[in-house]
Length: 137
Image: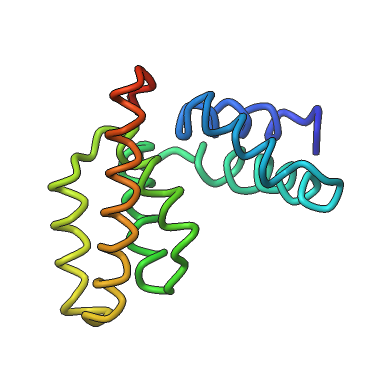
């Protein structure tokens, strides 16, 4: 937990993936109470500090894996977060849209439709933020 090497590494990776503004926004809007703070600390340590830091895949590839996983399991709020991460890691809107379309043959068109609706909103948000000087990286 806080203070462990995995926790500190996880916080660093999380900031790299999400950007400072998003991390601060989540701290204010989601992790602002003791219960959710515990969850955030756990995710920083276990997910970002241990999984995302493993050798073998770069952050860009891991972000795409999450986009695919979220779509396949219908995790729309998580998909929005992971699409932001994927854009920050260098995936283009076109590449991510194509990856989502490709899933249509494997997870079904209803899931892909929902994923593309989420992507449309996330991409529009990112473009608005870029216009305000907060580029996604």
